[in-house]
Length: 350
Image (cartoon, rainbow, N blue to C red; front, side):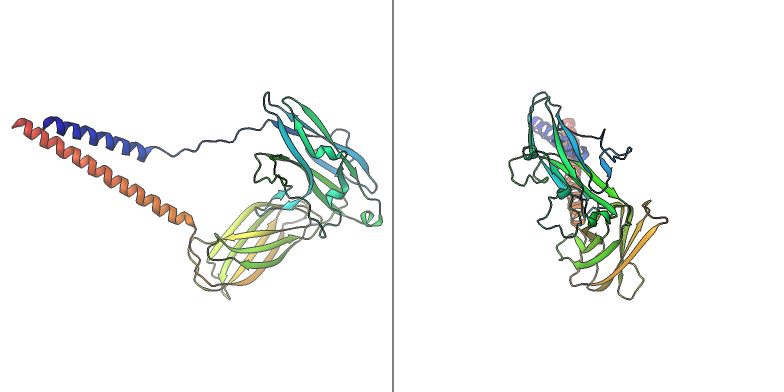
């Protein structure tokens, strides 16, 4: 009997120790992303109109300008061969919002007066797919040809795009979502000056299951980059000044002649059904403006379903219940150990 009780105590002690380890050991995630040994280097020396402070192609253009732009690709690996696809893509604005060169040119770029992919082309079609053996270097040549017509002579502003380099994973689209790595080299052409201008082109209320409350369509309708911009949204009941939800995005950067969907997240506290007003304020300290530039937009919308908190709240509750159960089990095992210890001592004394 004494042996079996001692074995039971040992077993319970081991279980308690394991539970303690589970409770106090932090969860870790292995970083499986390996460094890709690819370098993409724009060759800026000798480029006509190149702005000295830029580390990308930032060119003061003029009507009829023609020149070649060169980019060197280097495989720094000693063992791994690389294969990449290249494309000339227009600058777009992501929902972050920030400038992206990942999207291919649309079949019709009606919103762009001078699409970058029409001004910058590959010198050789074969350069759109490049294979690099370990330690191999290859230079890709692009042809820049600026129009010399009346439209460009009258143009003032910025044309922005980029050389986009993405892993060739066998997918025809080589989407960055399915690729391990991607790089971009900006290509900016400037002639004269134009000031950025923001517009709100619509607001859409999102379904109850969506983590965001509303989607706002914002657009920069001028040929100018807009940087150093803060976006703040306040939501009030209609005809009220009482703010029930707020959200702020800092350091927004918006591409020329681009539109994007700005998502306003659901508040942590549920909104009851009813009518509300969105107040969206954009504040920019971009040096293109002599003073701080402000845009104010408002739009009324309706909530038809209660807006619940995001899944993070449910995850927190589930995690709390888990640790509560673990604590109860641990206390029960410790209590059992104490019980067996004192019972064993009494029987030994008898």
